[in-house]
Amino acid sequence: MRILVDADACPVKDEVYRVAWRVGVPVTIVSNQHLRIPQHPLVDRVVVSDGFDAADDWIAEHADGDAVVVTADILLADRCLKAGATVLAPTGRPFTIASIGGAIATRAIMADLRAGGDQIGGPPPFAKTDRSRFLSALDATLVKLARR
Image (cartoon, rainbow, N blue to C red; front, top):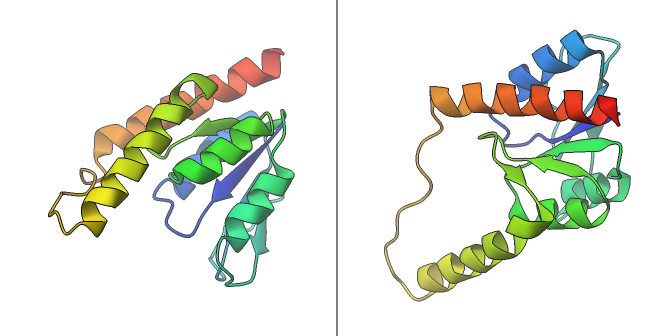
């Protein structure tokens, strides 16, 4: 079991470390730039090129049934689900095979509206409750995978 983090804009890296250390699960932080990570034997860093979707490509190639992927990127979540990984958003919301189609469709509609010049708001600001929900979801996910 391992955790792969799409780290460039991830607001819950510290929470990932806390849960991973408590449970003893390795974490790989994947980014396009050098990010500071704790010096810990369970934490590894992969810095990919700054090419378009380079971090997403690396994560998707390494995602499998033993991986928990943390990302807000819906298209990356889809790729990882197809590879058999478990995927969580930083808000704690799980991406599933049943829900990913609707998420992709909503993403496409919102992109079309923005392209048409519509002024639509973005997602709500990341809140303390999101952080708490993520901690619970990650812990529950790792416990569930460990029981398999």
